[in-house]
Image (cartoon, rainbow, N blue to C red):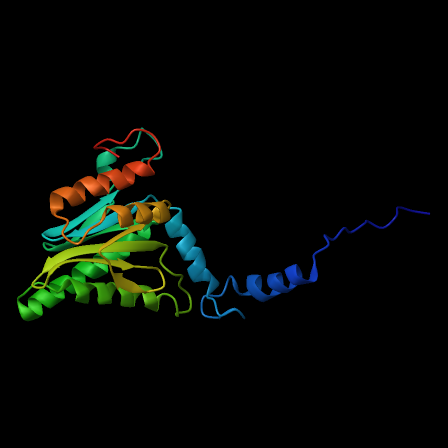
Length: 228
């Protein structure tokens, strides 16, 4: 006589579910090890952080570049002047981000340092494409080093140099592309669809500003004003 042994209940998993669990989840905590399907799962999680962030977009016009972003605050008690979503890297280029704000600050610091080192050496402003390569290299390095994690942020880099206006997107994987117009963040897919319908090669700054505001308004929850 005595107490019966405790009953252990195990959920039933189909064989394919068990295979996926062992084949993919086992690699989800490793940054430097590929899963059997050829993925670095931590990078996919970093993209999830970007896709959870507020929407940001950029439009390259014939005479400049427009960037726009949502700046919705989690509480009305926060001073909106203390929250920044756009940063200048040099007098001719800047960035806007979606994702984890603290991660952006490290990239901004590295970008500003690279721009000043280039100016000190050559006495001219760094080309936009070169600062993009510098930022992409930093982000890519954080995808193959032990003891670090990928940046949970995507950047839109906007600038103007001797070859004209430029807009680039840099992602947590370290990939970068030049864009005519792009969007990142939680509403990026719908925003890109809207931009595809409105964008044309001869667009100028005034029209680009209007298009950027209309694109943000399409996916904005609540009333949009100059503070958000």
